[in-house]
Length: 455
Image 1 (tube, helix red, strand yellow):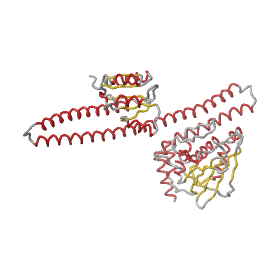
Image 2 (cartoon, one colour):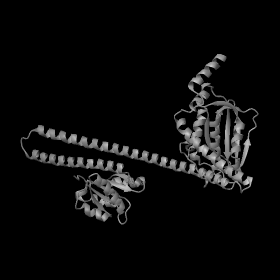
Image 3 (cartoon, rainbow, N blue to C red):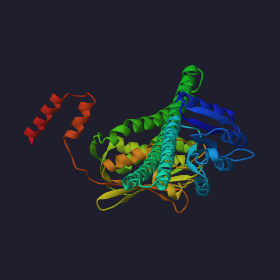
Image 4 (cartoon, helix red, strand yellow):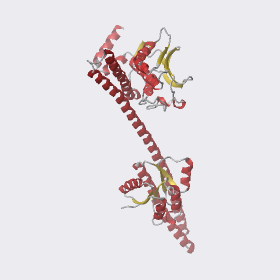
């Protein structure tokens, strides 16, 4: 049985049908109005438990409509929830509350949030009706008591206590409604942010995987089709392009595979003493084709004779690839990228300096967040927003630190400091071999026992 009568007002018929469908399914009686004028006519004939009124309407906006409806005696206490396609300015929200608005809902509607708010305000309407009836009853009794002689004062005291209890109940109910509404708004905001981040992440991953995959398929197909027709130089170009695309996919794959393990602190680092300059030269070599295609000069600025550093080779190279990709994404055609090494007492500082479009100063920290991406990139660049986040996790695992700063000559500088030495654990490499199926736990135990005996 339909218990609550709700007035919905919107100048778009499809919006009215959507609201009507949601409310009817949940046993609410609904009256519709396509304009403020129609709404006022309905309000003069029927008493409503709640009004859902669109703010932006032609001829008469939602706020004026609500003001006129509440001037009608039948609906003077009507609770109103305003509907809006955009968040309103503070002064507009205050204006709405002044004319009797209880809340706002932002389009498109979340049916769960909408029904929760409707239920809360219908419950409030019930309580107000109950309070109104109780107050009328109390007023009748008070009048009778005032006109009667010899009525017991005890009865009067009981009525006074009832009024106090009702007032307390009303105040408590209003507090509960406020708390519940606040919690619903916060939950809605968190859900929207999570949904947005997930959607953007899936879209970016799909694009990042699809583009290099299409390039690999395209160039290898051309190589197969023309293997007996094209010159060796042209075939080499096809396979170089396919190789470059596969490198791009490898960077993304490594970032995705490491993401959950890094967050769960399940990654085991295999530290080795390696030449820092040689590691950087290896990665520069991987990007030589990309640098040539985009006419970007890569400069090496380090002169250390001995630059041994304890790092996990594969993961540290992954960091360098992420930082190089990032530098190329922010560099324009014909610009330059400088890789600098500075030796400190117990660490090395690596700086990758580009002269590109730069990262806004207020985003220098947030670009290291998961799915964090700068608002400024080249038109053809893209990314899933994982590179700097994963790099930060890996550098942290090396007991180091990474940060970004504005290049005073234009562009961005990414710095990272890594200790020269790391605490050694003999079992780390063994753990990696066991996890990857290269040997069993029993074989590892025997090897460790053997090494211990030799020592």
